[in-house]
Image 1 (cartoon, rainbow, N blue to C red):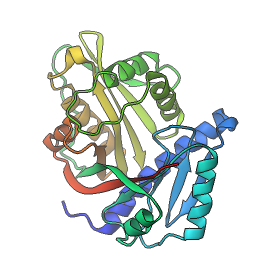
Image 2 (spheres, rainbow, N blue to C red):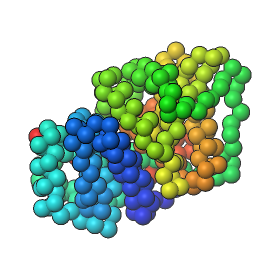
Image 3 (spheres, rainbow, N blue to C red):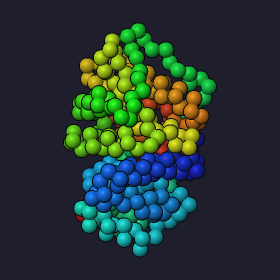
Length: 276
């Protein structure tokens, strides 16, 4: 699947609106969090509370360059909040941005792969094996889904070389903000009535963002992730989406699962952080 810069911009700006939505949720819940949403280089720098994974500058460098005076102001505001400024810069963005940022003291700290596949009529609802069920989880009754999420993410498969780890209490707070952000759907897969795996998805202007999925260790290697991929693909097709997108750590089991479901690597985001 060929990816021009226009497609990368569409995907990155969906990710940008996701971060902005989380920031809006945090601002309404916790005014003391000092949330910031600042336009920069055609995208936005989003600070949604100390230490959160939604904190990033994203969607930048597609038809716009960085105003260094504006960036200096944003950097100062983040420093005042004790947060290192973070850019997630697509390799298809303006190539002048990376040297500009490194000259300002930003360091490359990692990478993430953005993979995509077209959604079409072939993405029908899959038939589940005997004993398996998939439930939509309502936003006001997600405790069991949350427990599965935290337990599963707490035991990573160990395949990603630079996998980020967050304390359980921080991850729970982050996931609670995801749940409260409009556009999300949550799924819980059971095996013989027992919770086994979970997944989330967000729809944004025809883009289905596969925002995370995990399986409890006791139920791994049973095809649960593949089923949850196909289930979400069918839901996205019914909703009129034409693209499915997943972001993964390079070389991870999640990336392998995505490739098996027909996803192709489109581009990489370089993670650049300016230390405090």
